Length: 520
Image (tube, one colour):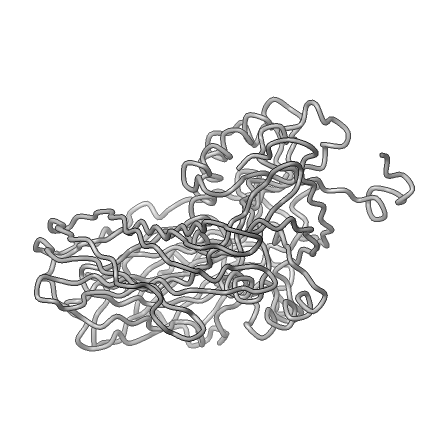
């Protein structure tokens, strides 16, 4: 979707920042982690459910880094003297820990529903900033690096159905030159707070041993006029996991519903047979045609629900997964952006994940209040600086008509950092997790791989080139770019030449000087 000629599309953003403190660290896993022994179970059709694990937790800082050696993760460890907090949570909202950087620990007990012995259980975190190490019932599950993307662990042979289970999470929010977002040097770091904690929701996902692990859906309308199409093609690539001890023989069946009315809009469901050996995964593709589709537009954000069911040979539903989608066509041509064939002008603002008294662990009420105000101001665009957002915001943008350019927090990286293979690998992990989480949202029309890096250097150009190619390998349907603050001074050398479109940050009238200093 590269622009085909004329002037490049120029997106300009104003950003507000908060400064935090800094301190380097390294991500080191426990030296003797216990690996769970996974036992394959027979395949049984079970109702799916998400058990919420947000809410009341116990919390303590670990200023001297003694938690692991003292066994703070052990199930029967006495945490009665710890603070009681509400997850999502960041410890920086506690006055005595306002500027604390280091380790913090969270613990909570919960009961896995009885009857889940034959179920597949996954412990799911929406986000933990920045480095999380996780134990369940004293058994180490692993770690996750990156503060704004979801991750999960298979706990089917560790969780105890019908009994009390204890979950422990060690969180590390230290800044470092080898993390993303990165400390740049001892005197300069990223321009927003490194809020430490379990900053988004936690849940236990309970399904049959065979389940739909992922769906990626692309919907393409055939336009017959501005904001009008006679037909749309909906293509779903569906990943199915069979973790049971037997071969799954069955089918995947899907239908499309109008999200507002709940009415089925396809003439007939689409389906394909599946045969998946024990403890294996497979990927299938389904395609549906919809006549006279209602298009998604920021003025009329029409939505549909794609509903897929995994069915065994006896006709029992093993798992059902629904995804909200919108049908729209975004094109960049002749120096303009077109939405459903309509040339549009994009206006909007960017907003940090930072709310008084809540930090980055924002409540739905706080997020909705801010975005209601932004929509009232006729916002139709946001590059939500500078990191993947809470899923509530993606859903809000889908339902209220806001175009988004999600971004990973590769903020002002230096040449040395961009040359680092470790940093390149970390960037790719964060990109892949962001795209996996946000792929199906119609509000997402492009991706951003970085902001204000040293983009007029050889390292910067190679980094942008590599990351854009990587994003396109994951999602070839959307344009990809990054936000440059050097294009105006070095346009011929800037890595924007590697991008599908132009994003340029200008600060005249703020940090960059008086607005009269803005040149032609």
